[in-house]
Length: 628
Image (spheres, rainbow, N blue to C red):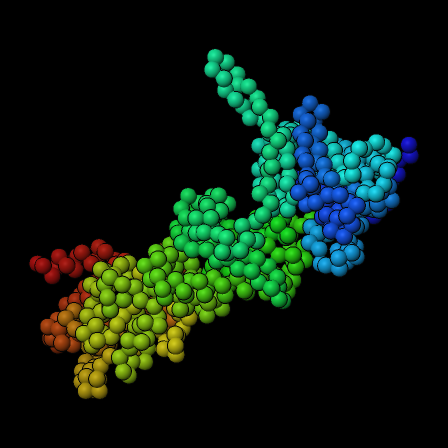
């Protein structure tokens, strides 16, 4: 029997297939099963127009047999089979496949759903095999043939005996090593898990004899019963009509498929045709995974091509701001690369991703409008990701999520508000959206700057998460209204009469303010009259892009320990407070004490803002001097 060599280019490609293209050896079983499904498809479609085939869809099956003693794994099908020439063409020349020709030339003239489009997946078997034997008999032929190869020195083809039409792929596994345990592919539980993972929705039954221990009273060792079981479910839930499914069906699938013990908040089941044809089944979880807000979390949807899983997590299908979504997409239109493990980045993928983003936004908008309690539960778990999305995308994600944001506010202590709800309640003449930053609602409401703005009837958003102000700086405005911190030095709350009075007081005391600024040795940009304070004597405001809250957040980051950020601050004084009169008196009578009081007021303002007193010893000494 003459051994034939692979062509030079085929030999190089085969070496690349085995060593480079596939990242997971377990993929070989998916490829062999997909090829078996293709072979059955071909004969099944022939049977629709040729009654002599004598088989209907229920007669077709893929069988798997694991022989631990011989160390062989066999995948058998009763599909179309191959002639000697087809063996030569399909297995002797790598990257040649009959599948594409069948798709275009089938007798029905339909776009038949064939999985194996590359003719190279078969060679993934050599990642785990020291030898592969293919025994096949073509439909309509009375001859069978055996193809044998070790994947290195070429292959042989010879005539043999085979009773039935179809193909057997017999994989003789490599010997185990310290690094690789090839024997695992002979264990029924491992085979079952791989089929469940990659081939659960192959349309024909995949059967295997499975061992089940049966414990008998009085025996130490269980008896072993062999049952021939169907390992795949065949019909994907997402291919069924919605009318056939209940919420319980969807929830059971989610819990089983995505390893979550909590039912999801909702699901999105869609079938889209047109420029991109695909089925999608998406879930919004009820809780965040433990690693969701860590660098270890990996986003992505499962990607299927005609029911065969291609990628477990396709990150390109989900934008970062919706990275919490779990689910899958099944499409026949995607351009896959040679290993079917990766996608070619094409127009179809981008269209699908854009449609999915729109579907998720619409579902969340519906939940926000119709089931506020459920939405707030969702937002507590995942709302932070919306804010990160705005910030990290430099605002490109804003349109997708800005209407989905929720914040606490001064309007109602028991209810969070959307930006649209805030804007709808704005006072006549109010030209900006006011916010205040702090650790919690309770601490924000203790801040001196809150008292006066609330008395004037303005609603204030409470930013209690570190990312809040950063993301709103990127968003800049909502519905044409800019965001403005109540700590902003340029904020304007006074009436014209109050402004005139403040201007007069500032002019009268400008020398004292300059002296106080000098006493703080450059720690503040200016000392000024405040238009924010009501009953408190002092506060800090910021000037420029870096706010006081941003200074706190940035300086708390480990990478900024040696490069501290500082907001440009103003020390603001309440001209109506008794302490202001005392300061004026000291300016005329005791400038040293005025300097000490200035440092005390500055340290007090730092503490109110949650900042660290720069010289706590000096601060303590000044208080003691004052007490004495």
